[in-house]
Image 1 (cartoon, helix red, strand yellow):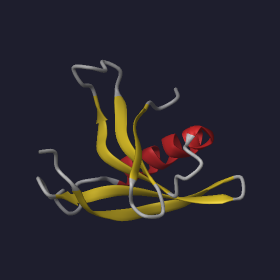
Image 2 (cartoon, rainbow, N blue to C red; image 1 turned 45 degrees about the horizontal axis):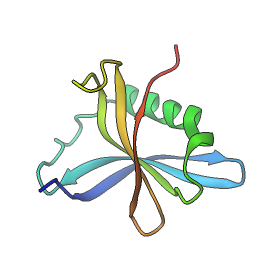
Image 3 (tube, one colour; image 1 turned 90 degrees about the vertical axis):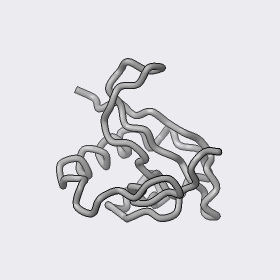
Image 4 (cartoon, rainbow, N blue to C red; image 1 turned 30 degrees about the vertical axis):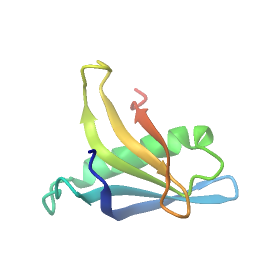
Length: 103
């Protein structure tokens, strides 16, 4: 069984046209708790920038974008990326996304 998201913390709200989207990071799932203070201000700022750069590609129902994993490579995706969920107003996961920083 995969882990369920329990809670997240707001980093910043971003504007996408007339829509406000919350940029967050998960701090707790049913499988793990992120140590307090483990995400630096730089990581939060860079993730916010990546979310803003990709905001036009979000699902129309997306109200929150929440980072699950900070920058990393994976077996399936060798490109360094953030893993994040798009969530709707009812906390339903709409999509799992890999976001890459623009250079």
